[in-house]
Image (cartoon, rainbow, N blue to C red):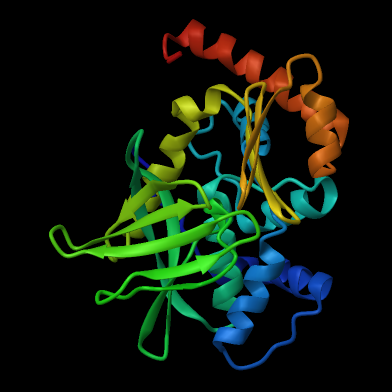
Length: 285
């Protein structure tokens, strides 16, 4: 997909928004350190993974070739409506925040069960060591990229393991609790060129993942995942599933503190975008 050559990703263009983030959470300006990185990730983990804001953006700008939500928009929507974004928007926002605090690093693309280059994350390079940070997967701790040993960390709802596979020079991320372990994604520790990242980001508006509301957020000791009318609560001790048919907007509003009217707007935008796609012959169920 061709991208307008005038569209560039320059983190410094959005540093005013970063200052709003810093003021909100009282993050002081100081030399980059792992402690500072952990502090930023702790507060950033309050930004949910959700595609409602993206669904609304798609409908309002359907024929615009570039509909991406830049960091200033993501920050404004979060503080006003408690929106977040999908992996592209939140990863680039985190990259911008880290750049403001003088951290070095780059974005990588990842493969998941349902496709190649469908997820992204950020690699922080600090004191000649590389760390994975992944806001799109609600990872609130940096994971050291080791080729020699498996690296594990804990979140309130699961444990996360990162393993290097020397056969294809890639890293694999797994989550596990007291009952089972599950492979999540694979990535090569190689920066994705800006042009390619933009192409993936823009293309993601047409992926099947945009055909239904999808949300993931951390709440105390659990992770809540919603897809269509299905909801799952995950803790270290197991999972509970729920059917939200008939009360989806109310549940999302209660859990994420998102204005009920914005949820209704997203549901309406979803249906109207489906009609437009069907008329254009690009609907993919």
